[in-house]
Image (cartoon, rainbow, N blue to C red):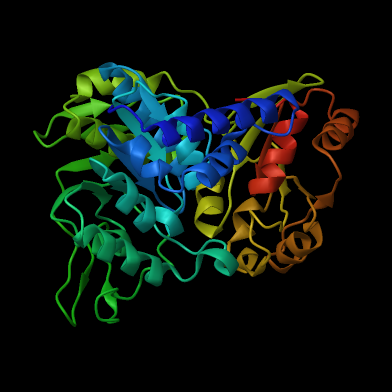
Amino acid sequence: MSELPLRAQLAAALGKGAASLSRATGRGDGSVIGGRIALKVEPDLLAKLARGRRLALVSATNGKTTTTRLIAAALRELGPVATNEHGANMPTGHITALSNAPDARNGVLEVDEKYLPRVLRDTNPAVVVLMNLSRDQMDRASEINLLAKKWREALALSETHVVANADDPLVAWAGMGAHYATWVSAGQRWKEDSWCCPECGGHLKREPDPHWECAECGMRRPETTWAVDNRTDAVIDPYEQRWPLRLNLPGDANRANAAIAMATAAAYGIPPERSLPRLQEIRSVAGRYTSVVTDGVEVRLLLAKNPAGWLESFAVLDPPRVPVILSVNAQIPDGKDTSWLWDVDYTVLRGRRVFVMGERRTDLALRLETDEVPFETADKVSDVITRLKAEQPDITKVDVIANYTAFQQIRAHYGRVQ
């Protein structure tokens, strides 16, 4: 990486100091405040910090943090990696991540969907990774078709290599704006936001899965060179060789994340036989999928922020005999609007003991009642455990699904488990 100008060095140093103070006083990990202070001193600091590095930008509605962590693990085959793998995904967090690793030639940055065009322009990345787009925080992030359009326009102005999920029509349309793309068949369980052609508005024919095409304008799914085979728990590479995944992260969504991470690693010259073992070492990501034991009961934490995310979380729940706690807030990071709850099919929870928590438990309770899912209310996870143990002394496990701030509150209660 090239030497920073004096002003940029000062900005980076002040940002790191602010971040350290934030951590020391227990106010957070310092990623945001550190970047904010640094930007006040040098508004062009992100571009200066990115100069001379080979960066990968990772953006999507769901799975950004996990995929960033997977790619960063793979790229450590090449040496130190600058990354914001704990999720501070706006420019302030990117500045902190790059400042904290001044000697790292390679970097992986999770990028909020709304900020991707700006960060792409400022950092001139080697690779941009696009995975999925679905409704999320509509009061903040705007319509996903508009996001896809901005992605497409930004990519058309860049020489970056795109690694993208061909099975999501919005993502594919955005990626088609790039000059060079690697297409991955990563799957798309949630299809309710992509029945119309993003090019002309016509109805998409979506069979046989994962194929899709528009009868009106002819836009169709790109030919893929990487693919997930969920039936055999494997990834197929461009040479048609199968790589059994055997991940320690559950579900089809994480198989998709791993496939995209392997394709991204390959763009950096790291073959599957070197990248996959590193992916297999990861067991949790910023508390996601972590299990903690409280009063002899294993509590597994799952994050779900929108309808697509809840659908994926339901898919990895333990058998119906295991109770589930659902927790929903509606703070600014979550989005104030909880109408998205009505897009989730909760009937899959019938026959399971369900508890509801969080600031918007009433909204969630009404939704469950409408889907004829019996539920009980609670204030804290520990209250649920106490109640369950009094009735079932042999209870050993509980699953928790929570949206963003509700998840962070529960995670903080357990000491911000990783």
